[in-house]
Image (cartoon, rainbow over the protein chains, first blue to last red):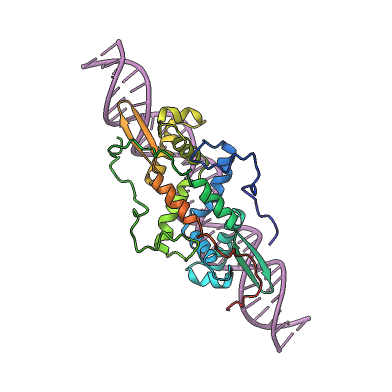
Length: 135
Length: 135
DNA sequence: GGGTTGTTTCGATGTCCGTCAATGCAAGAT
DNA sequence: ATCTTGCATTGACGGACATCGAAACAACCC
């Protein structure tokens, strides 16, 4: 399967500008591009279900043969989605004999959760009034 | 443009199947579709930067006139991205006089962060070998 | 080796998405 | 009233994506 996995987000180092989250400081274009790849990988119902099926698996890993029958899609299509999730760094896989097993990369989901979390005690934005959409 | 803002995620109720996160139990297709809409809205560098610029604003809200010049994109394009973020429930806006102000909807980002967080003390997956695959 | 099972890659097609130019609309300024 | 500014909407175009069928590849079993 080749090791062309694209590491879209550096492990934990960087200039420390990625971890404080996107809600506290505007992120530069480079970080936005990398982050968008991961969110784009999550922006598909099939991939979300695949990810949840993999992540919620008791043993921590799933064989593709257990994933495919849950969808009305062809096997190549499932493989394609798994590839995108893998390239996004959300899952990883290993071939053992005939089958390929996938498991979650918790560091990536933790990273995303941290990025979407704002430091506790934030003064709550919003105009504290009305709602009405503009226009 | 009417109030066609699509509420992609119910406030907090539901059958309680949405909050435990997508990492603990496989989500059904309906939830996956709704969640995918939000992640898809985040799957674009421009929208990520817009969101971070809005969220990190001191006063909690930003005028569109402060957002547009930060990009090399036309004003309609920025407006289009803001509309998608608003339809995803991530931001909201209000017209005050000549200008339109946007602010973050923290409940939505909190929701996403919760969904991506796995309950503390999870046994960490990874290829622990074994596992007899069905066929 | 030959056959079987299962996964991935390749090529093609239809659809969606991001972008812009032009236009429309609301609110203040003159 | 008219002009000007600020933002949203429309329509259209080019590129990217999802999906499929067919074929190539890898590992096991006989």
